[in-house]
Amino acid sequence: MSEAYVSDLIKSKFPEAVVSSHSYRGNETLVIKPEGLLRICGFLKNEPKAAFNFLIDITCVDYLAFGKSQHSAPTLATPSPLPYFMNSVPSNETWQPVAADDFRFEVVYHLYSLEWNRRIRLKIALKEGALSLDSLTGLWKAADWFEREVYDMFGVQFKGHPNLKRILMYDSFEGHPLRKDYPVNKRQPIIGPLN
Image 1 (cartoon, rainbow, N blue to C red):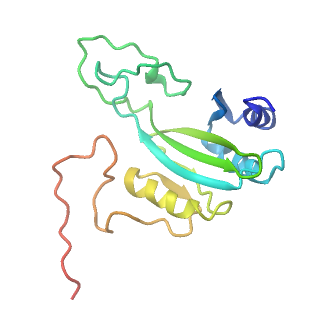
Image 2: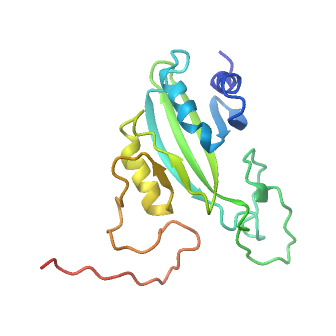
């Protein structure tokens, strides 16, 4: 099998859903469109040539100011579709948030095939005004708490999730604490004893 075997399989089966891909030392990464997530993951789990039966993790990255200031400029080129990665930033420019039409968030899925001893990473870029993806709880039960954590910390909605509610913060907590624009000194409602 080639180093990018699974990526090539997905690109041939779902060419309209794949934005880009790369492979490094056996670690395959596919950047895909949000609308292809459920179909691609279903294929990766059920196709005998792939057999990705283990969902390792789901996480999210906030690129609010990435590449927008001298201190946040990327040191390596990235195959991600996020357009501001490629923008050159003058050294005298100060911190500047991502424009409303830029992709700000990236949800990352890590899958593993026990049968083939292979890993794959799926990345999906999202704009701040469109933070919604299909839930993978129907494919992997482990997606339940992973999706709840991403919802709680970043505010990404997962359509079809059976119980999408906060998992780390309490219910009346305001905001999403892992977003780069979350105010450091924000005071939260105090929870007292329930009477």
